[in-house]
Structure formats: structure tokens, C-alpha cells
Length: 319
Length: 91
Image (cartoon, rainbow over all chains, first blue to last red; front, side):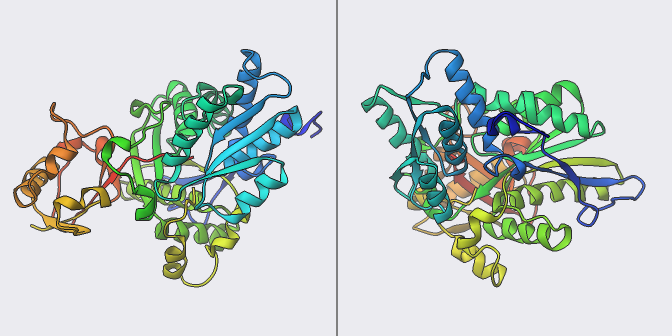
């Protein structure tokens, strides 16, 4: 395939069957797992879709003009995607990122020319959002795209991820994705529910160490403005240990080198698959591989015992 | 019937600092009533005046969010694990 620029080469990612990890790949009735390999996007993550969509929307409504500086709170992947889009289209970028993120994310952002402002580890992305909102107020000429509340984030998945999956898997019964900004689940989930009436939409959210939940009180909690729980049919909280275990299963049994959040998503997908298999029903379960494992090598996710790797991840934001 | 309940840092003032406590009940609502008897005030931080779960509180039974399994009517059985967490941002 030939494209005029890198941003044109986004999306149309492969949907790959998992014959070894599926409970009944060729059985009757089949219970099959399908991985949507979003690491095939230009910067290696699903966030390229949201980043380009949000920038295009801001250009269309006149908020973003040549030479502008974009501001965004991000735990990493959205920042890296925005940095690429900003580079291609001529914008500056300031990312507010929690300090407890992998060193590769910082290195990649700096390589793309983004400026990073760190927010405190305690409170995780909540604090990044708080700091970014303060910076937006202090710098009115900066344009905050705000992935947590920007409809163009979910729209990227309503127009891209969702239709691609249904086209490639018309027999889909379940869609499983990670819950962060909620953009993937809200956009692709809404599309699939509209077009495939009985499809179930399943969320996998990371369960971090205590540091990340270190709010001063419950009212500092955060639910993204995009989130609508009517789109979901179930939601799983996945520990670092289970996420790591499934990340390693993906490599060992299917040869897929994925990031840690993809392991969490597979864990939720397998919970559903096992239930369906036990009930003697059929299922075609599509789940998202959000990124590859490259950015997490320094975390020790792929070395030594699972218990040890999970302990090293304690307090880190891995999704 | 014993159910392990994991308590987040911000609510441990109600459990004398304990990270997890044991409770009982056939439903989540019964469990919260039971917990409130031994840890007064805890229930009030989880449930709003209109009787629903607090918007910024997530409760999981065996890692599954109870908002999709019947909310406070979610059934419990011996050996279940209940995790309470504040809602935080991802992405």
C-alpha cells in the first residue's frame, strides 16, 4: 500500500485469530478469540486514531491553526501519537505525564520534540488531568484537546475501529477493549451495538498499586466525560499479575509481543470465553491489542517470575 | 459466611488502617450493612443519599464491576472477594 503521508497510513489494522489460546477454535460450537493488532499503527499504538481525529476536529473548527501549541494530559501513548501528528502537521506539543510511567515513553516523547511536564506519581493520571487543566488556564493560547472528554476520540473508533472489526468478523459476539479514556469502548462499542444487535461490549480496566489510588478523598475521583455505561455489558478490573500472565501467554502461545494493557484485555476476553464455552454456546470474541511490548521492556515485565515482575510494576502506570 | 473486602487507602480510617476486612451477606447491600455495623460510617462513603453507589466509587466482586451484575443486589457467596476502589483516570 502507498500513502501520501504517515498519518494517511493509520488504521486498517489486521484482525488475527488465536487458535491456541481460544477455548474451542475448531470445535462445535466454536469459541474463538481474535486480536486486533493496533500496534500496526504509525507510532505503534491505538492512540494514533484518537490523536489524528482530535487534531483534525480542532483544525476543522478553527481552534488549531498553524504554529499552535497543543497541550494534553497523557500517561504516554496519546502523547506519543500526538507528537507524531504534531510533527507531521507543524504544531508544538506539551504533554503532562505522571512521573511513574516507563522511561521509554519519556524517551519517545523527547525524540519527537515534545515538551514534558511531569505530574506527581500519587494520584496517577488524575493528577495529570488536574495539572493540565491548570496549565490550560494559565496559557490560554495553548490548545488542550482533552482526550477524556473530546467526542473526536470516540468518533475515531466509531468510524474506524468498529467498522473494520465488523467487516472482518461479521459473526462477532463480543468486543473487549481497555478502559482508560473510554474512547475505544464508547466509539467502537456504540457502532457495534448499532450494527450487530446482540454484541456484548466488555471493558478491561487496569488495577494498579495503591499509590495510583492515593486520592485525598472520594470526591477527587474521576470518570471521563466520554463514559456512558449504557454502552457496556460488563467491566473487569485486572491486576498487574493477571495482565502480565496473559501478556506472556500471548507471546508463548501465539507469538504476539504485546504491551501489558493488552494482557489485561486478553484476561477479560478469556473470562468471557470460558463462560461461553462452559455454557456450550458459540462466540467470536474480538479484543484489542493496544500496543506492542517495546515500551515496557525496562519495566521488567518480560523477565523472571511473574510475581517478581508484578512487584516491580507496583506503583507504575502500565496502561 | 465470610467474604473478604479490600479497602482502599482513603477509606482505611474506618477500618483502623486495615487493608482488608471480613464481612458477610447474601447480597452486596447486606454486606455493606454488615460492614457498617463493625465499621460505622463506611457505608455512608460508598452509598449516596438516594441509595445508589457513589459516582466515584467502584466495587468489584471477584474482579467484575457490580454496576453490570445487579449493583447492590449482586449476589455473594462464601469465599467471594470484594474490592472497593476510587474511580481514577486512565489513558
